[in-house]
Image (cartoon, rainbow, N blue to C red):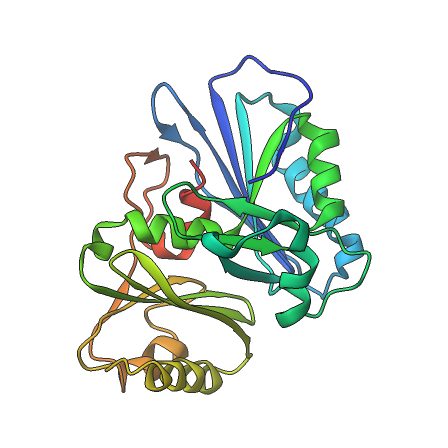
Length: 272
């Protein structure tokens, strides 16, 4: 969880931002009252090259007046398919490029960083959006950032749903979908796939379950992210998976507009 610190700002507001390749979501909350704004979303109409992503993110934040306020703390999660998980017992900071080059399509000059979650047995190594980070640093002077996979799995491992022996979860963002298995809150499997059609998502989810000897009729599937309960992916999964559960957020934030599908904003809402 890298941090950029420049100057402290006196404010009771905290800002949460979630960035992905084709958009972002964000909201603010007051740390004293726990009252939160509505969640704003900006999905870009056309494909945005990664090198121009920071311009679109800044434009969306400016449109909603986010850049005009001061904050006690700013946290950002980034989602892409350039992340891998390394067991803590095997992790060496000097080997960051080796970890990502094994599984990911990265360039020699790509900046590599990592998140450390104290209560987990893994470390997330990934390529962040450097231009977005620089823009946030210029805009706020101080912020922390995490990969969305770190936020998702850390929150999942602490969630009441993880009290059982085995937890199976699917996190989807645009055409990226992440699958993980936890047993006794320890990571057993993680992988990221890419697919645009619902039937392909269903295929990979069921294939992974089969390879890991998981019975869809016995083990509940907890879903997070861009999966609507009345959508094609949910319907397709429900033909084969007996129990599908949108993973709710366990915090006491009081939003101006009550959240009815907190699983869709799971990473954003779990930044604090």
